[in-house]
Length: 130
Image 1 (cartoon, helix red, strand yellow):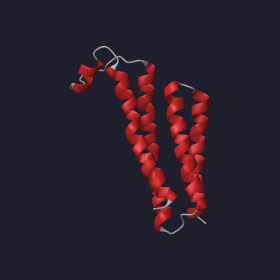
Image 2 (cartoon, one colour):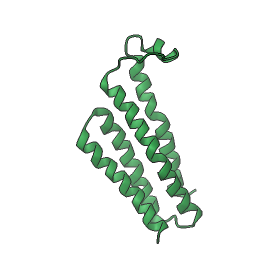
Image 3 (cartoon, helix red, strand yellow):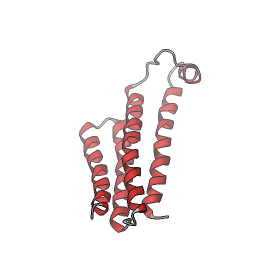
Image 4 (cartoon, one colour):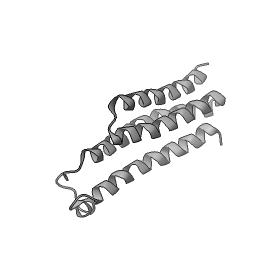
């Protein structure tokens, strides 16, 4: 497998692990474990960082689909190379940083690392369009 495809695997696994942070947080809230195993008919009041975990996860889900499409298109068209590999690596590192910064609650840095992840995807686009 190419570096790009491995990074896609890592990105997918990372996307699946982000909610674990939220689950751990919810389990520490009084009544959170019962709420988590229940039907969740009513919202559970949680600290703001747990809500940021949820938003960070949704943001990763929203960006994983285009990233996956680009990696697969580059691979299927034979355009995977060092540039697409670097773009994928930049995407992954930036997405991990984005989740951490989002959860901690640093707004301007969050936007900056998000932009870096987009730059990684644009590197892949540049090779597909070449």
